[in-house]
Length: 278
Image (cartoon, rainbow, N blue to C red):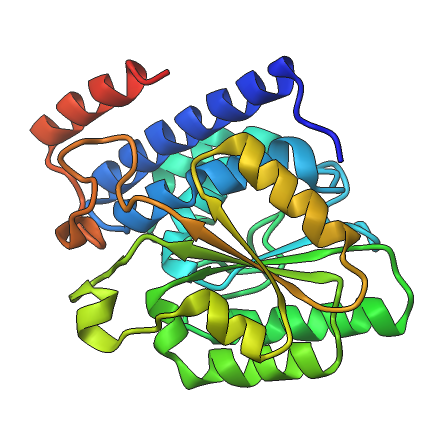
């Protein structure tokens, strides 16, 4: 397995920083959205779109492209920012988030947004769709890989475990589930609402290959994705330890920022903080 070059690491870190800055502006201008969980998965999405994925924004429906399914669809602002940064559509579209007659809805819509591989929002359903994509890839001997991004609160959905059982049974090795384990959901700590722990052990019990990694360590995530691609006998779950609201101190580890937009004054303060991040 190969490590990222210094240039690639810098590229990914710059993209993640831009994603967070764009998300902050998007939800502030919309006065609506989900910044906390968008920030926690920004590093993963930056790495996927900048380095890991076989995709071409000039041909969004390329048949053998890798797929990304944002099962935690409320983190759509992060996905939109990553897609715009990759060149799927103009960044000017980002500032129209949740506006009437605009392209970018509050949750991803595959029919109207280039680069979105599955319409998601109802938690658990995106993961099931990703399993279907992976089964199709495996059955047709296609070369594409499917990455599903789930929240840890989403794991409270029964449908997630039906899908996990399905993927494990059919040994869908072209499927990687990336679990955004930031420990918080809209109502508080996931362990207080309905604990999904132990996450890694649960996936192992459903016959998944499991990797645990720091979700903000680009090199560790890259190694995990390489390991997942090399696995040929089982689907892989990457359980990523992350920080909700990562990058803005006032937002970090605060459930209150799950679905709240900053005020104009807060935006100025938070944007300056993000701008100063390494």
